[in-house]
Image (cartoon, rainbow, N blue to C red; front, side, top):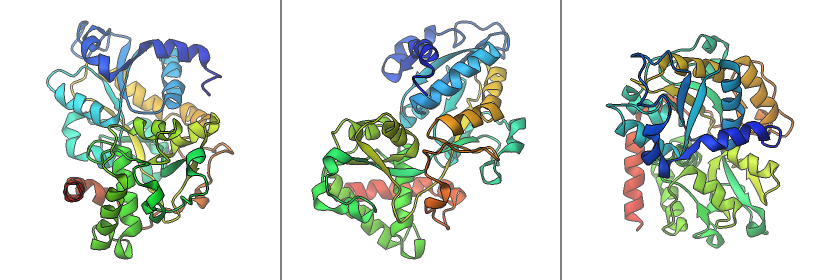
Length: 356
């Protein structure tokens, strides 16, 4: 995918702004504060997208959107936590139009940051992944997985959550902060559902496992989702808890890693795209949401990438693990998780403190 779009990638890469420099440069981007031709910004053929998605997915969607609509996209790439903080800090004067990161579970408590919008394409999505909130549009799914560095793992068995407690892995597990990282939070939920008594994620048995897991982290916790899979692929860590998409991309690029779906189960949330409330280009933002879940983009993603499209009747590439080979938690309730996210994060923080 990346090689096939080298020309588009080069153009896109020139416009990608990392969060480290975005604070100094974002105000100079076209359409992001300097040019205000109208209250809605509908005259401007420009859009600013904050994205925590993988390079391959960004490079599939954004150049095609620009080509098909004539709208230039300015891109800010960073982890979910930093981007969400940025949207919150800019609430009084939004500099972005789209937040392409996280999911309903992570964003529900902050939906006041986003504009209500349900795309006319929503009716074509799988029933379980329709926009039922009015704010968050699930576009792709990315199950929770383990990414394993095969050179470092050697003969160490890493197939289950219990395997993560093995002494040889102490200090060699890449994991983010569940309070700020959507992948870390969903991975935490996966282990809670896996180890909870009778599947109860809030049972003492579930949190007993969390204590042991924290101890095996040996005080190491990473700042972003990207740092997790990159750390494993670069050989800094033996195993990481992350999404399937970036992990499978490393496999396709022949990195010394493999993707493992824990035998106990995986969580399959719908990654969403949302329009930032008060943004300067709402009409362009609506077009971006529509485009994301269009037949064209959903088919291209299914055939070429390592994310799972959520539109009905889209075929997956042969290299993707068939859904019938992935064990999903039958009692996983995204609405319940969303409602209790703050309580779960608070419990994580307390257990983290208790194990220092």
